[in-house]
Image 1 (cartoon, one colour):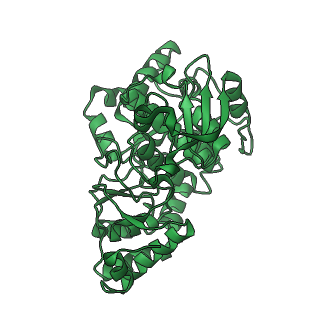
Image 2 (cartoon, rainbow, N blue to C red; image 1 turned 45 degrees about the vertical axis):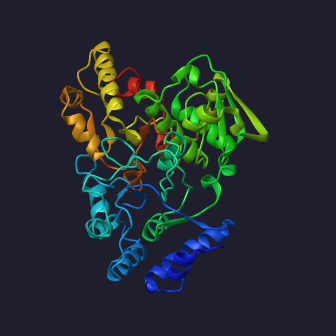
Image 3 (cartoon, rainbow, N blue to C red; image 1 turned 90 degrees about the vertical axis):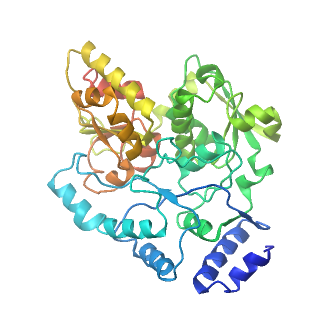
Amino acid sequence: MFLNEEQQAILNGEKGETLAKVMKTLVMYGEAFNAEKLVPITSKYNHLVTSFGLKVMSPVYDLMQQLLDAGVASGQKFSVDPRPIDKNVPANFLQNLVFNKFMYTKQDFYEEQLEKLGLMDEDAFSCTCYMDEVGNKPQKGDVLSWAESSAVVYANSVLGARCNRNSGIIDIMGSIVGYVPYFGLLTDEGRKATWVIKVQTTKKPEAQLLGSAIGMKVMEDVPYVLGLDKWIGSELNDAACAYLKDFGAATASNGAVGLYHIANLTPEAVELGESLIAEGAKEYIIDDAELERVKNNYPVIWKNPDAAPKLCFVGCPHLSLEQLKDWTVKIEEKLAANSKKKVCIPTVFTAAPAVLKAFNETEYAARLKESGIITSYICPLMYMNNPLCKKMPVITSSNKLRTYTSAKYHTDAEILEIITGGSDK
C-alpha cells in the first residue's frame, strides 16, 4: 500500500507508539481488501457502532483507555448507536437484574470514555444519526469511517456519501488518524450495480419486506432498483427518506448491502442513470407473489409459535419525527374503529433522544401516550440480547430485529391491527 509522507511518519512511530498501532491496523485492514492507498476522511462527524457497556467487552474498554492515556482523541466529534436499556421499557424484576448486574454493567464507565474521546453530546445515541434533529448528516461525496450497517447504507445511498461496511473499532481508528483505506464503496467502480431489481408489485411494497427480499438475493452486491419510484415518488422528502431508511436497514441486515440505487430518486441514480449498471448485471423481478413467498419463509423460533405476543417493538432503525406523528394518527383511528382507548399489547416506539425531544414538543406526544404507547431511545436489539427477554413472544415490524433476535415479523399494517385489538396474531 502506498503511504504518503505524513501517513508513513505515523506508521513509523513519529507521533507516538499508540498512533503507530492505529495506523498499522488501518494499513493491515486495507491490505486485506487490496487497497492501494489511504484517503482522507472528509465528513464533519464520525459515527461509532459500539455504544453498549457489556461486561464481556473488556478488550474494548482497555483499548479505549490506551487511547485516552496516550492523549489520543478522535479527529472528529462522533455520535454512537443507541443505549441498551431504559427503565421505561417493560421488564420484570429478573430481566432487570440480568440487564443491570450481568450484562450492561460497564455502561456508565464506557460512556465516560466516549465523552473523553469526542462524543458529540449526551443525546448523540442513535442508529439514525443522520436525522436532522441529531445533527450528523454527511454531505454528498463525503468520505466516512462508519460501521453501523443501517447508517452506512443510508449515507451511501440516500445521501451520496462514501463509506465501506467497516467493523466496530475500525470506525474510531479511522477517525483518530483521519484516513480510511481506499477500496470497495469508496471507488467509482465499487459503486456500480451488479444487480438490476425490477419492482412489479400492484401496490406500494412494504419497505422492510422489499429490502429483505433484495438483501437475501444480492447479499453484499449493489442493486439498481427500477419501478420503486412509482410508489414512493422522485423526491427525497420526509416520507421517501423514512421509507428508504427502513428499506436499507433490511437490505443491510437480511443481506450485507452497503449501497443501493433507486432509479429517478437517489442522488447517483438521478445524476448518472443506468450508466451505474455494470456490464453483465443479474436481474431479479419482485412482484406480489415474490414478496409473499419471502415473508412466508421467515422462521418463527418462539417456543410456542402460536403464543399471544407480550411485547411489540417499532423503530429498528429508529423512527423519524414524521413516522412518530403518522403512527400516532393511525393508532388513534384504529383504536376508535375497534372501540378501544389503549393498545392491548405493551408497545415501544424507539427514536433518537433528540427526535423524541422534538416530538414531545408537538401535540402528538400526549396523544400517543394516551393511546398507551411507550416511547424510548433504546436499541431493541440490545434489549432482546437478554436471555430472559429473547424467550418472550415479541413482535416487530423491523426485519433487522427479526433477523438478529427471536422477534416475530409483521408488516406495519399487521402490527397496527394486533396492538389495537383488531387481530390476535
